[in-house]
Image (cartoon, rainbow, N blue to C red; front, side):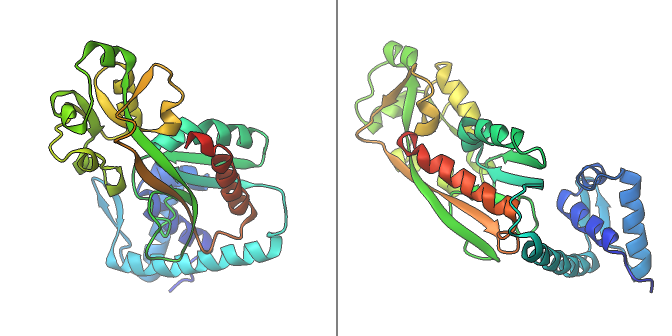
Length: 296
């Protein structure tokens, strides 16, 4: 058996995480044909098939999973050594992928992180603003802001802050519809909400906390779309305060009866937390959010 090259193992890791040749090539800064050659070289070296080529992408075989875990251990060791050697270097270089809920990404972090990256020429920030659960073990993100503290895995989590969500509607909607004085009144109003079966984050299912019989008239997979629908006068919906305060045309509905609390957690893989770019960005995100606590 030929000894596998580390660059080929890196390719295996990235392809397993992205599941696409072109995406892996972009991450590695090589063309997709080179990605294919690296995988073929590994399969020849180990005399096994490492990936199943399916319509949804490249999925690891059982043998591929075993090699993936071994390569990931090597990657983790290299990361730790890297942190030991240059961990005190304050120059920020490299790419950091940050996974956050879409509302927080669009409504608060995007502009701040973009401005920060603009003043750090060696740093590239990838902001993934999607309402989903990020697998940090598989490096779907380097840093994640989540709504729950992870219960397993080699992850380090710290509480950023609690935040508040309330019911909102456009002023036009409120003025043109019957008054809403109690939660039961919502049963005769148009309500905007999440598509429950497309939303894997249970903490974003709000309606049962307000009234179990509410049937929304419009649902979306993102809170950003819901905000747009509410602003357009489509109905009443739950929004976080940090998004609603940007729109004076919104009216808070049942402010004394509906106050939903959630918590933002900052999560990072234990093997990455000592890297300067990871540590500095974790501090930046936490400080930016806490310093604006009045809108959360």
